[in-house]
Amino acid sequence: MEDGNDRLILHVGKHVSYKGNPPELSDSRKLAKKVFWRERIRGIRCVVAPMVDQSELAFRMMLRKHGAHLCFSPMIHAQLFITDATYRRTALSTSLDDRPLIVQFCANDPVTLLTACQLVESFCDGVDLNLGCPQLIAKRGHYGAYLQEDQKLICEMVALLHSRLQLPLSCKIRILQNINETIAYAVALVKAGACMLTVHGRTREQRGPNTGLADWYAMRAVVNAVDVPVLANGNIQLPGDVDRCLEITGASAIMSAEGILSNPYLFEKRHEVNWTAAREYLDFAERYESTISAVRAHLFRICHHSLLEYSDLRERLSYVCSMKGFHQIVDDLEERVFQSVSSSGLEFSEIKSIALVTSPALMPHWICKPYYRPVRDDSSVSDSLYRERRRAELDALAQKTGLSKRQLRKREKRKIRGDVR
Image (cartoon, rainbow, N blue to C red; front, side):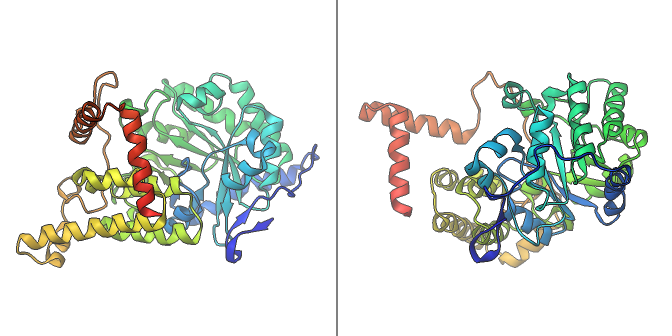
């Protein structure tokens, strides 16, 4: 175990060891693992989902402050975690207060998965097998939701970990096209040794512009079919969604991803101005050493609606690469909103109090609120006003200078990075 700065951050160091062929656990130990989450789940209601480059330590710690009872790490590639010491250090960081924590892996080989999980046994409360990632990179790598046609291999991985690993294993799945097949899939996982399930109520094909709504009633069918805790994932966007989902699905707890990215105060059933959320996140990001890419991604989500309003701030956010630069963008956002409200002759405190109790659809852009992905045709050119304006600017510059658009973008990046460093 290695400590980070100020002894706050823990990493799985290159000297952490594992047993090449751990002995089979006793029946009593296996039973204890099965019981673990059944007992622990009683104090858990709101769960932070595993999100690539987004459920990092800083964001987890911020959400624990604001109502999260359990957090998942970002998805980690098991093979790389074993073989690449640099990847191992950057893929997972935690702290003593970052509990309870489940570390999620993607894998397609039982021994590889077992080895990776052994490396984190001292750093978390459980491990999770990702069987839900629908992205094309998962298809190419043969993991995530693209393993669901090979349930024999999946059950071999689950069974080996249940038999040999000290930690309880959970699995995160998506529903299949047929509800009976979904139930059979979930039952097989539990029979093989899964101690908890997370059910994302969308199929593998429901992603990107085809995301659609999650099926809470399909989740309910799984809840009724298995004897382990089930976390319900999907459609948790508004403060009242937690209670509605628990009531309809009968799940032990809910898991949120996109909802808490847009509004980190969702579990507390409230909204807030986005620069307040952004600054709080930046404080956590500095303390827990988030990467620049993670910080940028979070600010894009927290301030999404305002960045559509102020396209120049959006442009700057895509290029800056320092905490000072991020703070300046947030400061500028706040100043512009105050100027806009002042020009109306109203007090900001009055406007804010009204905005916070307004329907989310009618809230001003500077309130943390859900982002609803529009249905669009990926084969067509985006009709975003910002993108259209940006293309026009680049076309004009390209004609004037004789440079390609790619060269112009590179020059802009170098110029902006030079300004903020």
